Length: 260
Length: 260
Image (cartoon, rainbow over all chains, first blue to last red; front, side, top):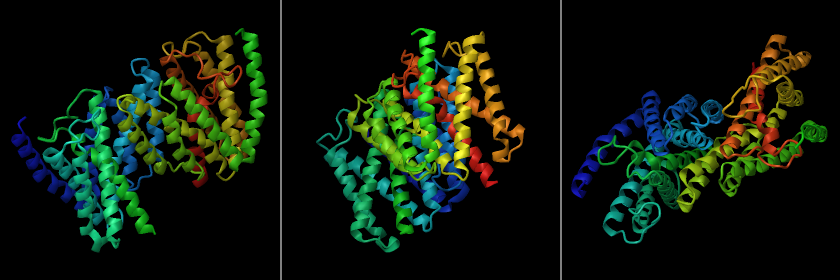
């Protein structure tokens, strides 16, 4: 796909998609929860296909994570155990068609992607809407600025063995932009500008790491995109991979800040 | 190894090992916790070798699980996240030497084996010592009776594709024995004999499932034993595999019973 056409689709998807997510996030409660559950299920399917395991078993596990997430808190222990038991049962009955490594991949993908529920947990905190807005804006800013900075000024490869498109210049641009945009939130959170700058850059680092995890998974299965659901962005995971790690970071920071 | 010699070693290990565990379990607190942490670390090493991943990364993850387990409750969410982050960092920096499937195996083994801390959580409940004694006796009874019943009367294979030594007759004998032995605990727990029989058999089913999970992992890597630390029993995992799933079952049953 040519650059202008790809960019056009990318911008269009963002212009249509971002307000939808912001609206659902502002609304919170069931609509937001169901939206995230849908993302989780579609993401699991993409991840399973990338890891070359049947999507059925991650979906069976997902029931427990969705059920546990409904409580609005990351109290996973009751989901981890049934998920482990289901994986164990599948392993025992389907062996050797379903190998221990495939069982591990099933367990890992259903647990790791369940971090996509953290925006919902964040929304359930006091001032949840502000924190959620912060998370989404900073993560998107990092992704977008890193993409364009890298595209136009990128020279040095960040992780050549993993994702040739990512550059040091792109990441630095993204981190600076996330840090600076965070400063806008000073009046709301009662944090010093320095703390907010550091938190914003930290969110950028987490977003980058989440992105690189997906890059490794895609690279290992020789795919460029995780799927093709979002025009110009690829699959669900191509768009929401950063959130898997940035959302828990903001959630735990916010809980700690509100508690202390 | 000939049958009498193997049996002799097995009995000797049990006669020396069981009182040690019972003593540590009765003592509770730090000694029991450290003992379980040691089992966890040795078990992780065996599991990593079976799954053909370097034991280093499961050990890095284990720090978080050990730290979280020290609280005496299965509140894992704060361990799951750092473990996922560490696995992500390892994946990103070591790719392609460390593949996504190896990352998944790392995450899975450190999470699954952390269920070995449930005897400690059980010990921390009111009447914890009784519940722990129940768990250990019933799990051992199941393992031992199933082994010997299968050895002497076993005909029909239970899971021929997985573990040719296990027979339907062995499992039935084990389940009956666990159910019946449970009845001894009637005066302590204030449960009806039927409930106790069902709980005891349930513990047997969980123990069998834990055992079969390890069988699948061993079979996938063409090993007969997970290690050679315990004479006559193989490795740590060969002896404690059943506990990974039976301990959480007893813990959650006990919490629910005590809470209700």
